[in-house]
Amino acid sequence: MKYFFALLFILGALSVHAEFSVVTITGTATANDCKGSATLRLNGDAGPFNISIPETGYALSNVEGDIVLTDLCAGNYTIIIGIAQFPGCNKFLSFNIPIVSNTNLSIPSRGDFQSGDIDAEARINLTDVQKNFKLFPNPSRGNISLEFQNMQQFPIEVLIFSDQGQRLLSQDFPANTFDVSLNLTRLPSGLYFIIARQEDGTFVQKSLVIKS
Image (tube, rainbow, N blue to C red):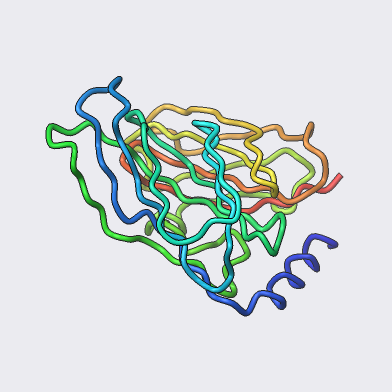
């Protein structure tokens, strides 16, 4: 219950606007040349923001505007975005650096983050499959089930983050996975974020409350 009231407190406090998006991506010519890049746009009077990318160890504090991330190899990346004035309030963007013959690949801006989006049912870089990603029970004592619909074409990577943005688990599941069970009883009580993503850029997110 205390996590519920904490979320209500943040929702009531956050009356400012923020917009997060990946606005451009530069691909790579091969899997190993690591010359890819992505431009992250952080706008709004909720800033400044803190960002980190667990896959690379990249981290910046108190930034806003357009941030260019360079020297990226082909693959999937997760950007953790925190609002500096609300510690522990994190959101996530996911993007893919592709291998392309013409390494200049532009993608449109996707998603925004506004007041009311603190709960992890965020409109940040999500697709229509968000409603087809089910998590239960929630709250949980640590044993949870995930169900996927319309996500069977590609393998699925499941990641779990703490409310501070620390990656706690990363597990891959093969294509044609419809449901999985996870034992998270080793985790203490708290708020967590679960992300399921695929190599085609599909990215869905849920929040989870674990109670002891």
